[in-house]
Image: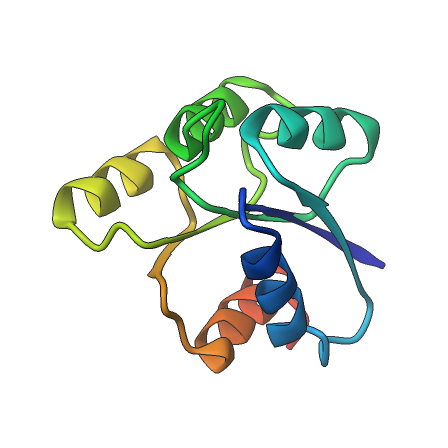
Amino acid sequence: MKRILVVDDSPTMRRMVMASLRDLDGVHFDQAGSGLEAIERLALAPAHLVILDLNMPDLHGLDLLQFMRQQAAYRHLPVIVLTTRDDPTSQAAALAAGASVYLTKPYEPQTLAGHVRRLLELE
């Protein structure tokens, strides 16, 4: 069973992301409403993939991504950034910090599912 941690401060967006991926077999979802909660969730139950928003109130998604890449346990954990920030600077910063994929909202559910399948080797 593959575990995906969905990190977004919007409960509605977390539900939309999980609904977009509900047809994937062998996947379990966990969710966090903030960057600090995400760190706690990862410590309690390791994930196989993280879907991460950048705009969050307590810990910016980019800061969380940089923190994760500094930890040996999360250094190679695939991270899909899913954000409303569609500017080249934000995209370059996230990819430089170690994001596996950068997607903007609104997103195509099939595109997100394709990236998840590829990163989790579900194909």
